[in-house]
Length: 146
Ligand SMILES: [Zn+2]
Image (cartoon, helix red, strand yellow):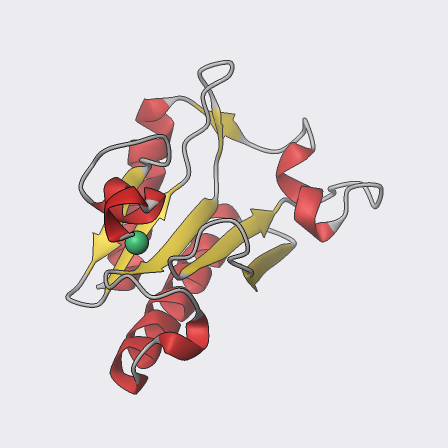
């Protein structure tokens, strides 16, 4: 089962979910989502994932949960500091991929109300960038995670 997990594959640097590395420790990996359609990516969409393959938040050990919470909190503060967003959203859903992952993403200032919290990244006025901009932002965010 673990062999087929897209997030385990991602952690090996393989498969369709590979993102840009931001930060990691022994329990947690933080990465920036990459999109591909037009060569640009919404800037400010992170995944906080357990290294260990577990299906859900409640399946983490207490130590892992504390490490995830600390990383997500620091990453959220990083997004706040670096992007000055209206909100930093966080969501744990996990219905499609059974490996713990937390979404953490910015909602830019002045995003119209017609874009729900889940659709914040769809607003064309959001900041987007290529791989260089993602790498630059990731490096700036990593400072907040150390
Ligand atoms: Zn997995």
